[in-house]
Image (cartoon, rainbow, N blue to C red; front, side, top):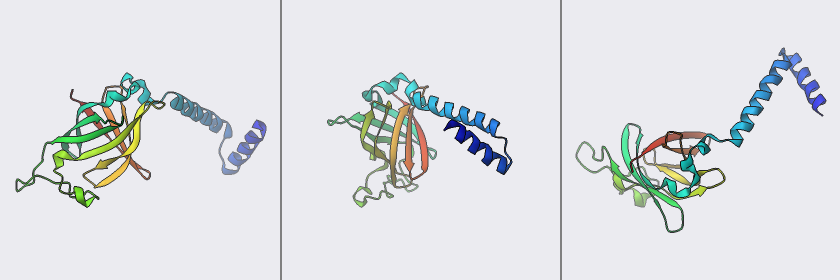
Length: 176
């Protein structure tokens, strides 16, 4: 079987003008990087990722030049919730409190920007040593995206939102 694959690869490479041996070495390196990356994921390198309750606390983040503070709490069902409790620029030019006007849920559009719930129902994934299983709300865009979070080696919480094939990561610094 292996010989058939090599012969086939050699034939395809010669037809399009590529040397197949360097391609095989590159493929072997790529496979090794994939296997090592899967066996030792980067987010699992931090001891903060080993317990679900390690995510509980207060954090400061920045998104689109807006500083905010978030409190992550453990709920009675064992999941986690994050709610904004401070925003650097929480009033508009008229001095009025900025509201969550882009929220797709019309009943939440009157929520002040410093009381927005970013996520709830977040679960600790012990196997992957990260938090996932819910969606995060982006108040700048008014969208919800699949969420995954983990601590980086320097102790920051990486919060990644993914919608279709597009992702954005925001890093939160622990305050206490």
